[in-house]
Image (cartoon, rainbow, N blue to C red; front, side, top):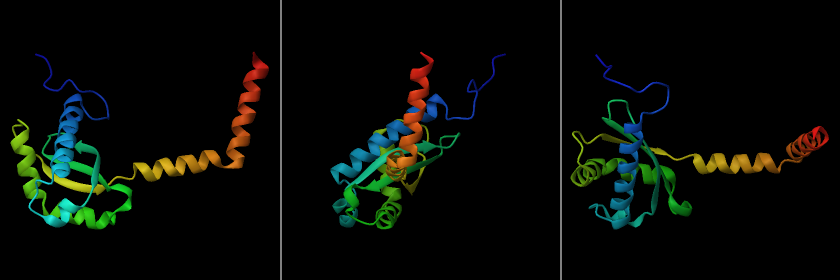
Length: 141
C-alpha cells in the first residue's frame, strides 16, 4: 500500500505552498477592495508578503506590512486581528477549501532583512573580501 503522505523533507509541501499562495492573493484582493466593515482597516494600505500554513492546513499565518510606513505595523496587525473573522469569512467565500484556516498575522520582516543584506554588502571590509575572492579566481584560470 502506498503511504498517505508523499511529502519528504523539512520544508512545506506543495499543497501548503499552493493553498498559501491562494490565500495570500485572496487576502490581498479583499484588503485592496476595502470589503471589510472597518473604516480604519479600509484606510490602511497593507501588503501581504507571504502566507504560511500549518501541516494540517487549519492555521494560516499571514506576514503583512503597511505600505511605505503609512501606519505603525502594530496598528495594522491589531486592525487585521480585530477583523479576522470577517476576513476568514471572505476568504472562505472565494476559495473552495474543505476548511477555511484560522488567520494569524505577523509582521513581514523580509524588507528589513533585505536592507541589512544591502548594508552588509556595502561594508568596505566585505567589498575588500569580495574583490580578493575575484582576484583568486582570475589567478586560477
